[in-house]
Amino acid sequence: MRIDELRAEDWPACARIYEEGLELGTFEETVPSWSSWHEAHLPEPRLVARQDGDGILGWAALAPVSHRDCYRGVTENSVYVAREARGRGVGQALLAELVRRADALGIWTITAGILVGNDASVALHERCGFRLVGVRERIAVKRGEWRDVVLMERRSPAV
Image (cartoon, rainbow, N blue to C red; front, side, top):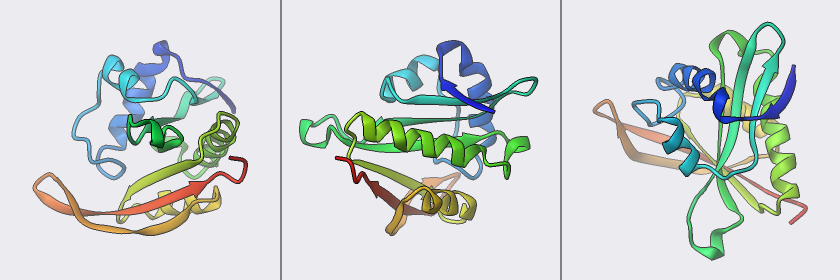
């Protein structure tokens, strides 16, 4: 497995992985188009995990939490791993590299909003240096049901 830059031509494979995560990993109900996704995320880092013969196993990226200048170093991460590749260290490889590159870019805080019940994602973030901030109760509605979100963050020791 290798970690590469996510390119526009990777989006169809990444979108399929995103779709697999709609049930557990996100409040979104549909997969965004490339142009919508591209606009919403920082230009770097955007990563994919590739395996020869298996194609793209997962992806990770950062989005700004605000466009106000005072928050320029605060982001929210996304990490998605293909169903068949889960439990093989793909998510940890992606998130560890995302964190490393974020530090190099001067990003001082990465946040993660994780649906309550996605224990694998919480554990992944803990392994990569994130801490629990709290649980935002009944923060959004998904499929007619109020859902809670675990809020985690990682503060860069380099910035």
